[in-house]
Length: 143
Image (cartoon, rainbow, N blue to C red):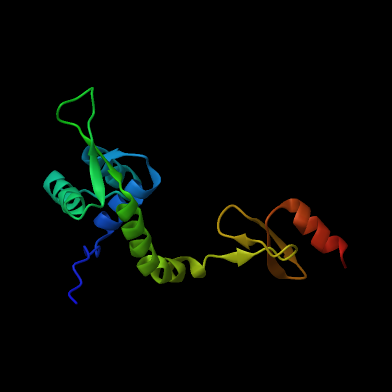
């Protein structure tokens, strides 16, 4: 059996799939704009539209006409496209987990996983991480 799945090996394609996955519909222009704003990356419109055409040929996306513009059509994921996006994300799960694993902390009081914007306190000369100042107080009160 030949695997004719679309290969998603670049951050640009991965991000395009991400945007299609979370938005009801997107345009190629929107993908290009978000790549620049969110990732500081540029891609040629040809690259993006060829990828969208490839997704369309596989039945993963369908066109959405934009009544405000003859040139600007949108795209949305089909049921098969959502399944494809899930497969792509499953392949990238380990990579994403490895990238952020060192940054994840656990609240010393309640155990909730912390990634960003957490409370830090030094207790008995050890830096401790808490989800909030209330958990820090509860932890200190438990001694």
